[in-house]
Image (cartoon, rainbow, N blue to C red):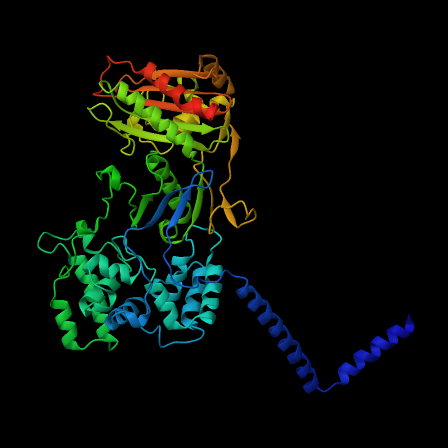
Length: 565
């Protein structure tokens, strides 16, 4: 013990007698070693981040039914093509650089200013003036709704992007995927959508207008200026780009003057010629699935009445991933829709509307399984002529009335989420959404267990396949919670009527007629499914009782599910 103590004292004595120069060299060696370890760790961290896409592609998303059958495609409204910078008009490249970051191509390697701004954002001090091309590109290709894509991850992704790609490559990728209005993603689609010409033929003025759409993609389609200058805002945005191009030596004074003198709408194609669906409360139903950011839905399965189901899935996907990723990201989305059961429901709805055409204007049907998954969702309108039933047109939400009875206080608050109070009728604040009604009765059927109603089961970058059981998917969870006041639920269950489906399967159900509209409702369940049916009268009257018809449709829809062929 004393020997070891003497040895340690001897070593400390040697170190104290070591010249100061050698001690500094030792500390410098430790510092270099620490920096090397930090650099290696940082490099591994960067390499572990998701790589940017190999090319700036726009790939539509595909929706599948629960059995893997493609049922719909969600994509951009205007055909897309990726171009090299050399295939774009030089004025367009200059205009994009001017509006995004005039000195972008002049810098290389680490952009100290941009990264300083990113660090400031980490501390809650955003600097909009430093939102350069790299940041815009990453925010476009990464899901902005994903909480995992934090400022720190975006900063690291910027560092990695700068290591992997040159500045012209980054600019080219962004130019080929940016949303530029009218359903156009990328400059090729935008040149065609706005001017009907290739991106290589854009004039200086047209290129400046396209570049200005990066920050205001609605352009002249959203003109709201005074009567004598409707396009004032669009003209100001375009002229701002032209001035910036002039200030950075991209235009001469004569080119600037000529560009600013031209009307902003000169050469712009009418939006109606593009077939872009209307957006808004007054839009026709066939355009209702055209999203505000230029998405469209193309049905891949015909005669199955899938518009309502796909529309609901569309909204849920956009809420979760953002419109850009849904329209351009090539998602493969598995839904809970059961196409064979959906077809059977469409046939049953057609038969009922054909037989009651004199008093029924339309019908809605929703069927949920005991997991809360939407198996069937049909919305149909009947014309005056028997047999002319449009299963894609859909019905307007209308007040539902006191269908839930004594259990309204239990499930009403949940089912009435985001519903205008003006629709309140009786004790239920709920507009006529059959999937919500089916979900409410699912709570009752399970004795008070609330299950999240889903129509999207999972999303992935690869198609569903049994050969890839461990593919990387975003599976949407099913949540289960118990609702209070189970006594009220028991009262309602006791008040349900017993009925027998055509095949002999037992079921419980409840009928109601909305007094203000004459709409007939029927909701109930079997051992495996919960369903809601609404039949709309034509015109709304109080003298017509369609409740028996709603009950018949309830049985006709549920029977094939209970006993599939």
